[in-house]
Image (cartoon, rainbow, N blue to C red; front, side):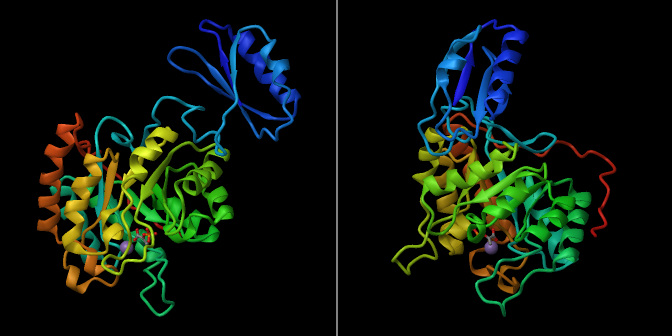
Length: 354
Ligand code: PEP
Ligand code: MN
C-alpha cells in the first residue's frame, strides 16, 4: 500500500503517517518525490485498515498496489529507478550501458587483456565470473578468491567497475568486497535466501531471469531484494529454455517493454547467453537496444577459441568493437546515447580478498 501525501504536506504530517503505520505493526518507507512525498507500507498482510490512514491530515490518496510484487511495481514508484554501479556509471538513465568481459576470469593476462579491449571499445563496466555455476561439476568452476583479486586488479588497471556473480550465501560476502555490482545468475534467480542476503549487502544487484521463469517470477524475485531495503536492482533478460535446438536459449526481448511497463527497475539484455551463438550476438544486441533495453551484457574474450567457458558465444575484441559501433546509431535513433566511463579516478586500490 502506498500513501501519497498532498503537495506541500508538512514534515509533521508525514511523521504522523509514518508513526501510524508503525503503530499498526508495519514498516513505513517515506519516499520524497519531486512533486510530493509518498509513504510505502511494507508487509501488508491484507489486514491493514486503510481508512485509519486516509483520515490523517495531509494524506491525498491511498493506493492499493494491485500487483503481487509491491515495491518493484510502477504503481509504487512511477519514475524510473537509476542504478549507480560506480560514480558516473549508471543503468536505467537516458543512456544505454554496455557491460562486457569474459564469461570467467581465467588468468591475469586474460582478464587484463579483456578489460583493456572492452574499455577501448566503449564498455562502461567489466563482467567476469570468479565463481561459476556450471551445469557439469567437472567443468571449470572459476578461480574463486583469486578471480576476485584479478578483477580488482583489472579495475585498478582500467577504471572499469566490476560486475561479478555470487553463487551462494558464504561467497556473497566475499564477492561484495570486490564487486561494484553483484550478479545473481539465472540458476539462482529463485534462491530466495541468497536474494535476501544479497539485498542486505548494500551493493547494486544484477538479477538474471531464470531459464524457466516468467516475467512475474523475475519481478517477485527482485521484490526479495527491495524488501531488504535495496532498490538498486538491474533486471536482465538472458533467454529462456525452448523446444528449439537451433539456439541455446530463446531470447525473449518482449520482456523488455513488458518490464518497463510493470516496473520502475531498469532491464538490460544478455544476447550472449540469450543466443549461445557468436554470430547471433551482434544482431540480437542491436535488437535489444532497439527494444529499449537499458543496457547490454556481452561476453568478450581475447581468444574465444581458448575460453574455459562459453567460448562459442564470446566475441573477440574486434567483433565487440564492431558491435558497439553498430548499437550507437540505434540508441541515437530512439533518443539515447551510450554511457561513457568517466575519466579515471586516480589511485583506485587493488583489494586483497579474504
Ligand atoms: C554468466 O553470465 O556467465 C552466466 C552464467 O549467466 P546465466 O546465469 O544467465 O546463465
Ligand atoms: Mn557465461
